Length: 130
Image (tube, rainbow, N blue to C red; front, side, top):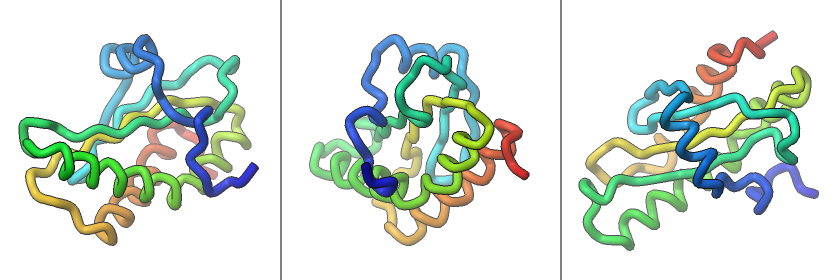
């Protein structure tokens, strides 16, 4: 299986897991993305389960929300490698939710840079950096 993909087993779809992330998980912001995360049990198949979201309040048209979600997923897919390697090394599994919180359409390059910064911050929060 390719490491650079965003496969079905990596997608966060469980309603109970989503509710747990928002109820008991932790969060931080790397503007324009807010990252919610929760360490999960080791019975999960993937080291990272990820989901993305955009507020319908700020983006009324579905086409705009879908575009932002595509950009978030692509930035996640390309920047997850270092986080994934650290999680595998330490034997931890997490569920994360990436929420776009800005009111303007994002620029992909900025979004990808912020995703990288967010994952570095997440590694320090999980205490898995070397």
